[in-house]
Length: 398
Ligand SMILES: [Zn+2]
View 1 (cartoon, protein in one colour):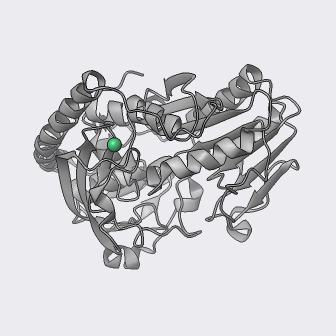
View 2 (spheres, rainbow, N blue to C red; view 1 turned 45 degrees about the horizontal axis):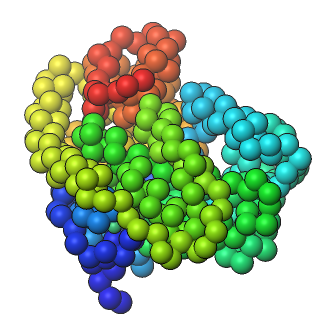
């Protein structure tokens, strides 16, 4: 196929500036692999660039054919109490703000339907979820009787009318995010007060905090508030409310249907886009330094005693692949019981439950996401452990 990465997935522009590259990342970093399969997974390169027309960051080396999801993909955050509280309050707010009581809601990338369940508990009448990776045998039936899940793609013809059509952490995976936004627009177009909710990782915060561990191959692109607003405009949607949440790591847009199909939408001017491009380039420079620094920190931690990594999500997995690919870390911990006993693509090691740290007695616990620091501190206290806690990157605004 034509080299996909030569054009921006949001605006279709072809002028981009290089940011940063990582060679040989596992293609499916969150795949459930057996420990003995972990080193033989498929790999791909990340050649991250920033679009000079709309500020979207994207991987010019991305191969969409390589990055297939299947039901062995495990990235649920719902085992963390902090994440569940966040999701529940978001669901309640969306139902209140958009008068969704008694309404139909629809979600693309719904997984096992956790968020649709929360929306129905908060008053929505029924929820329709679409997710090609949904496997009822593995994930079970929906938790709520009003939630229906399907392993098909979200319909693009408005055949599932809904007052809220939404996606969380889907657009950044897609070759054509504007196309999905158009499908979501079609679902709400006939509903008075219909709203499209789009949540993605916050690319602006990633570059400003040098959060390079957020980079994963599956994320074809990263949105800034500017590029997300422009993606919505191109899909015929307004940018009514742009918010950040979860320690600003997530970026969310609430949109309503505009007249017209968005084909005449113009990107924001250079005065808005150019500073973001400069910050993205600065991020690339910092990221290279940060990797060297993280490798020397690792050597120092290992001098003191065993090192554990808490959090086998995307951030922890990228960190292990870039900083400790030879299994230098003695324990990889996750609170999600569905990950227990599995390996991590690209590196040696086995994911264990927190209780396993009683045996490891780590001197240092690396925290993959600083948002969970308090939760982890409490869990270590309950286990009777006293380790030095180190976030993988320190600048949290929590
Ligand atoms: Zn662009």
